[in-house]
Length: 187
Image (cartoon, rainbow, N blue to C red; front, side, top):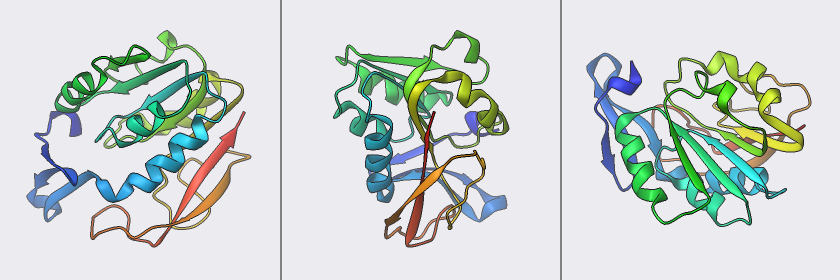
């Protein structure tokens, strides 16, 4: 299970090792920064209350904080990343770090003006499509990590549009296209 794996942190990536998958398995890498910036800009367009599911390297969290928002709730389940998220959040009065599975605590969450979902090894990914509308305020905007290399994605949420973003990822195991299709869904 992902959350039980020992992670290794470098400036350019988070990874773990698994000989069954060829050694190094990247969880997140810094080449994603332009995608994190675009995601943050989209979900923060209305300001207000933002929910970020998955902290990773904190790249998107930093971009979210650059926008005029009221609150920023971050849910993270990996113990090592929780520690990094708590350190990052120190002194940020509008940030609330919530630990554990987003799905397990979904009934305790509020509704949000913007939601960004970017997890790794999430056992509850299949539930995102049905829970998302419940967490959104009217007019709210959501986006999520999209592994597909065309204007489609794993969730197939009706009314989703896509912004094509040119990128140049370094060699990795999870995304190797020069075009990223940022999903955009307004409720």
